[in-house]
Length: 402
Ligand SMILES: *Cc1c(COP(=O)(O)O)cnc(C)c1O
Image (tube, rainbow, N blue to C red; front, side, top):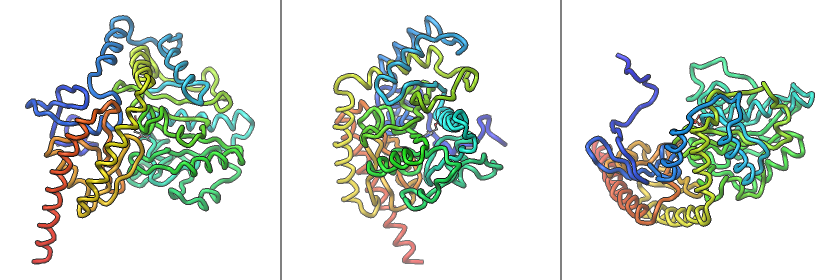
């Protein structure tokens, strides 16, 4: 019999009743160290006092009004985002997929607005992830996302990750934009080298096409800059953000330059909930916190510490781990055996990580994680690796026997 909740997730048999900082407590009061942060969403950990305060203060005054009125909280968040980024204007959504939908629509509308509606195709990369709507699964193109949901929305050209020749070949008269994640998250924590991002920017400028970045996972301080592309010095024309920007409250944003948003006029796009007073009040508090003096330096310091320890772990357990990769506090452990085995072993140690493609486990703690919490995670990982190594040895002995 089907479950009351549609069974689209293979859920772990645990549930939590309370959270505090990087800790989650289950129904039996067992404490777990959350180094998955709801997939890079709880950027400031659980129940951050300033976010609780921002949410409850706003909840007492006004939850929701329609976007047919001015929303001062939304305007304040947009203004602050604009101050801190390449963007001149922002459209707010409830999720990452909707932010990317808006990015795709903005790029198509740009060319149509300038008299070239035939320029509607967007080049995307294998291993990418842009959400679960029909447009965003078509954008990513992976079989495991699209299977059974056809016909796919037309207008996306997929090229292999890092294949410059294929990319050049894919650009044509109908190309509107190139869309890429500065660090592939779901695809297995694969960073795009700075040189490549610069190369993409140049390529877009040469051909008069737009550069769209998907920073839904890599943004909001996750890599030690407010947005990951800042490391390379380039700026996109359009960018999607979500996950961390609401700190756990559903919020997404599509940021764009004035030029790129040229066609997005009154009546062209909308959202019932996007950027409502509750979401905007929380989003503004998250942004202010991440931009406080020293916060992003803390992310970089914790990243250096965590990465060094993970490299050490991988070096001592070559039969379990093959590689550490990623940027900032968006790190990945590539596993030798199926990653589900190690995921289970770390969960048994009450440490939560998040699986990704390419047999990788994501290590994505809250951005305000502390050294003692990293030490606790490393102890759990040591024990889990020892157990995984033992299991793998037993399997090999068994295979040798039969
Ligand atoms: C999670 C994610 C999305 C989709 O966000 P939702 O809020 O789940 O719709 C899009 N792009 C990237 C890079 C993501 O990591």
